[in-house]
Length: 214
Ligand code: TZP
Ligand code: MG
Image (cartoon, rainbow, N blue to C red; front, side, top):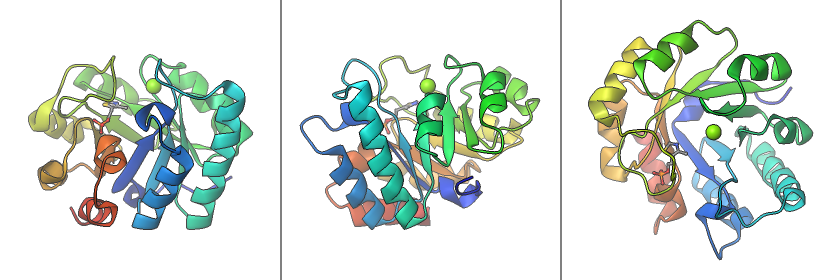
C-alpha cells in the first residue's frame, strides 16, 4: 500500500503524458513540477499524440513513480489498472468510459486509492452510491485544448452544483488558468488538476504556489 489519500493532495494536481509535452522529456517536466511543489501527479499517457510504446510507458511510469515517492506525493495512473498495479502506484484515476468503476474498486481495493471523473449531476449521484471511491474529478470547467473527447464545458456554476451534490472531495479540471484558481476554490472544490498551466508555465514556482494558495 502506498500513500493514503488526503484531500490536500488535490490542491496542485498535475496531469501529464508524453502527448502533452511533444519534443520534451516528460521525466524532466515532472521532475521540475515536483521541485516546484505539486501535491499530486497523474500519469495520463494516451491518445494519438502519445510518443511511448507500451514497454516505454512501463519504464517511464517506474521512473515517475520513484520520483513521486521520493517527494512523498501520490503517483496516480490514469485509466490503466494493470500499469498502476505493476508499478505499485498510490492511486488510479478512471473516467466514465474507462473500465467499469465497480470492477476497478474490486481489483484495487486495499492497494490503490481511486479517483473518478464525474461531469454532471447524474454521474455524481450515481458515484455517491459506490463504496470505495476517494475523490471526483469534475469538468471540463472551461474550454480545453488538451482532451479531444472532453465532455461539454460545465463552467463555474456547473462546478458549484457538482461540488454541492458530491459526497467526496472534488478536484476541478479543464482549461484552468491562474486567474481562475480563486474562483474555483470559491466553488468548494478541493483544488485544481491541470495539464497546460503547468506544462506550459514560464514560471513554475509561481504557478504551483498560486495553486497551493488558492
Ligand atoms: N479531463 C477533462 S479536461 C482534461 C482532462 C484530462 C484536460 C485538462 O487539460 P488542461 O490543459 O489543463 O485544460
Ligand atoms: Mg479516462
